[in-house]
Amino acid sequence: MRNRPRSDTSPIEAAPRPGPAGRPSRGSTIKSVILFTPKIELVLGHADLCILKRGRHHVRNRGPKRRCRIPRALISYEWGDSSVIRFSILGPLEILQGGVAVRVGGYIHRAVLGYLLINANKTIPVSCLLNAVWGSQPPRTARKMIHNAVSDIRRMLEETVNDESITLETRQPGYRLQVPLEYIDMYNFNIIEREARSALACGQLNIANIKLREALGLWRGSALADLTENGARWPELTAVDNKRLAACEDYFELELARGAHLDVVAELEVLVATAPDRERLGRQYMLALYRSGRQTEALEFYRETRQRLMDTLGIVPGAGMATQYELILNHDPRLQISSTTEVA
Image (cartoon, rainbow, N blue to C red; front, side, top):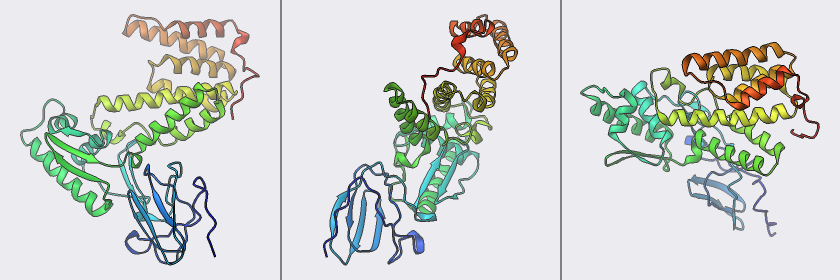
């Protein structure tokens, strides 16, 4: 009996569950397949064994075979512990192998791995790693310590992660961590955040809101928070955290537009305390306070911000924040929720 063709855009209705050492067991079935590789061919039929490697996803059959191309939009294998690897840097550094944390090591190991991950697939000079770990005053044995840390990380990746697509190579004048970017949460955040901005540009506010929630949901704190607590001050981390704040601002804008000021006012209060120089967040916080019946607090927040800027930098808040202050002071009707905005 001939198999009916499957649509390239439909989920695969069968994925083997792992047997020993993470390999799929005979006779098991697949619930869904989401693939991270950009170009994948899957042989479909009466599968009794599936061997999974990056770039090569083969099913050996006893029955009829046919090939189909699986769209990149399908993303995650749901097979069990040893089938999925995730590098998480949007928060404390964490490696998860099928949901189980992998031990990385002490500060030097974590700093080296974190810096290589944030610069994945790039050759990083040893001098940059020295500066990332110790700043401008590394100890005399620093190069040897970096070499030892790299050796330990390489051994950990080979023994624990055991993924052929992930390698830590020695490349003059330093090292290169070769890893599929989709394994790293920061790069997934970037993709989803770009999709949200595209939706915003097209006026698709509902889609933008959903995408922003999804992107921000990947965060577990400041980027590599465990390293920054120990003194790491990398420009790369500042850039990543600024992208998060920009996504937060877009998200709060949409939430305020749909009248969810009571839901976001507490979050805004925390963010304006941690990022006091972002005036867009300040304006959003003032609006959320005002709509929550806290006009006095909104006005006081502006006055405190103005005084702080005068004392520290000798400047005043920008025109947007000053205009917001005047609108709140005068109970301007433009501050009310627009009835024409539709955001899910």
